[in-house]
Image (cartoon, rainbow, N blue to C red; front, top):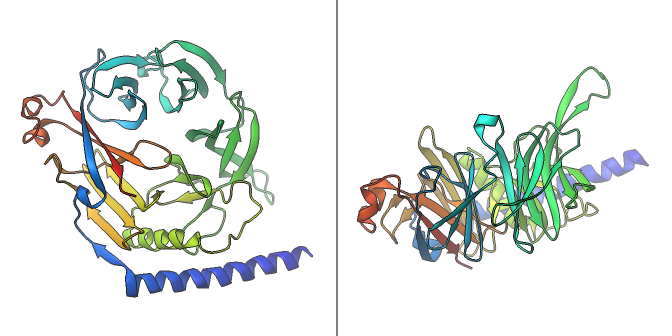
Length: 358
């Protein structure tokens, strides 16, 4: 009976894999348009500038994990969790005791917008809950056999996490391999659900161990993990497969919340987008597939800012788990045309916020 089930699964994989090949091949040959340059006006109608003040702890040079709740903006910069308002005024620094001097680092944070709270994961595997004024509400240690938490998000009243675990080899217990799983937790960190992550790309429906996860995001199928690829051709094939997969039966229909997937792109209502940015080498690659116009933007150094004339956008970051809003940071001479007073001081950056077209 077990062999019969495995044979049926293999047949399904071959059938749907062949269908996926036909879809991808048809798109690439008959419909798809590929562009090697693109302007922001191709994906958005408005960009909102937020000139940032200098925080008490020093200037903002780079930002990650920018999040918004109403008039409040949160972001990580140099292991600091900073809060500004939408005018760019500095409000406070949250989790100020998590710093390099005491050997602790901010791994990730999420907003509980319903209760106006910030949940911060540190390198010692604590989840620290603060209110927006920076007051510590609680600190819970993650008492689980996890080697590392790679990503965390808050969705539908639950915490979702991806973490690495060591699993013994069944044939040789002295050997171990790394597994990467998706977990659903309540706010007290009780595990409600877990499932191995699977690659959701073209011809890759298999369990994959040890792949890093950059973010946890949400689409109409459920929670998924994101990790950018560096191979443009694979990214194109995988994206076309994922875009068409919504019209095909799932291979794993009994898994709660759909498949536990690793996507090479962030999915949205219309766009599939990925930015692979290396701040050390100052190199980036942006991939964006417009499902409405069947157009793929494959861009070295990103889109061109034709709103505020700040040049190429090397690092276009999402601001919400649904990938509706994105942002980018500019400073120095990049601001010369529209913010000349800030161009003279690289410590005075501007955060630009945009909403993708639907």
